[in-house]
Amino acid sequence: MRADGDNDLEDVIFTVRPTMIFIKACYVIAALFAIGLVILLAQVSAPVVLSVPIALALLLIPAYYHLRRNMVRYTLTDSKIEIDTGLIARTTRNIPLTKIQDVTVSASIPQRLLGFGDVIVDNASDTGGTTKLENISNPRHYADLLLRELRRRQ
Image (cartoon, rainbow, N blue to C red; front, side, top):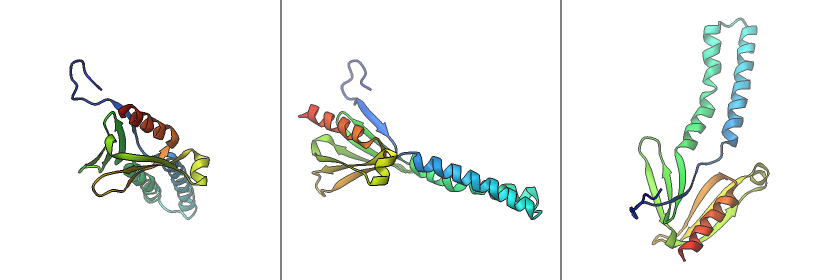
């Protein structure tokens, strides 16, 4: 946020991460499988000391995807888009708003039904290309915010 008398700081328009829909579903499925596994192992007289840790290990699968999701952050400021990736070693990619040529929202049928999609940003960098903000909840809203900021810069 911009402090009084300090014009070097940028205003943050939004910060967003990929959707949590699949991660929440994965946690529920893993928990159900863990409960079923404990019940199944109890039926074959497996010791609880063995069956519970094995069942809890199933929760490591959604935890891994949760961690991967948290390693990606998209931020729109009043002058650029920042794409931060990584956990310990972070990489930040900056795309100046002056280089952005087109903003597209893309969503498959399942994505549309679940309310998320991709925001695709075409830029005029030296290497050219597109940047995809993947699996964003309500992508049209974020694309509109980006387009509004682009119009403001013109």
